[in-house]
Length: 436
Ligand code: GLU
Ligand code: MG
Image (tube, rainbow, N blue to C red; front, side, top):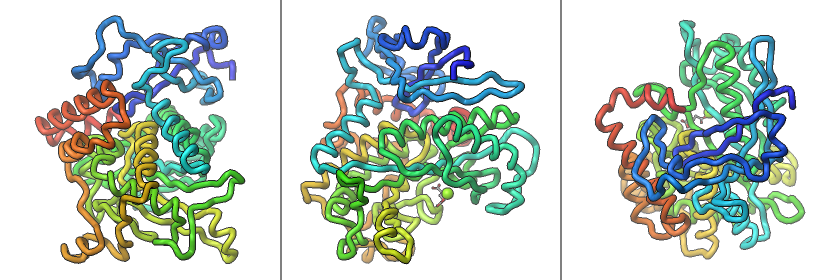
């Protein structure tokens, strides 16, 4: 690991960009306690080169303190030096947490969940991305030809993910032209969020080494297939047993899972501002995109917010072990820490039982008439970032999960992004493709 000359300290900001400052690797251990400084106002950076209104002045500084357990290396090759990096918690001082640290927001939510239920959350991410940058014409969707076209890149990505400690579970060509997907296996939720960030950076780096760009933007072009970052979750009891399923529960969900899902759906209009947080996210969401356009739940239904994924085995016990739920209105412009923290907070709100789970959607909700959707409790999700941010600001419960500084900065960022997109509705796709 120490053959990397520089180690980058990494953290996520509210727009889901992984920011970095580096130091000589030989100094890492010595400087790990105090980390590196970063102006708090950096949390107000847009995905581009602007900074929005925020509560911080020139003297407010956060410390980016590395969590050495997250350190990883992208091995070098003949032409490229190895890259070492480590994820940080952002703190206001050595002994002072910062109430705007996204990783802390995520960790606190997961700890609150564990305290409330005695269970833990296990999560797994899917990473869809588009490869561009040479003039090869993309091959037919899902075909072996499309896989072979980028096989050399995919092989190197697979190896680099493995070396970085974030192994792939599947590697495949997707539906979009030039679109590929790598999914990760399930692991404890904080680690899964950490590893989602690492995996994206590894994929970007290996693509770069091949003279390509990997973009995780939710919508590479107005009519392109979208890139999702579907998030699977399941619940484990203290013995590690998957307790997500119950044969008699709604959609086959256990009581805790059903209530958790009801909490998510109860707050989903506000949640999508955090999980699908870019103007182009709303070009991805919507009916018939297999992304999801409706507040709904259904077994194996790929057009709803929560797709229940039963395990598959002749042995019912084994099937229960892989039973999980997939949250679909999420993309890689969301910080994994913000998205997971907010989903877990919403799920926790549901545990009290005051949110009713909608009836299962047994077909594409877009094919139902309005009256059927209303009877089942299915609603259209926000269709623009502005609508989602309106819902976020209107939901006092969701607002209460955040410090005022983080909430107001996030809203300022999203209002700014919505206004920029409105000023250049055609250029917006290329802009986000470049930033993400
Ligand atoms: N690309 C789709 C999305 O934007 C997902 C397709 C799939 O189900 O894998 O979410
Ligand atoms: Mg996919």
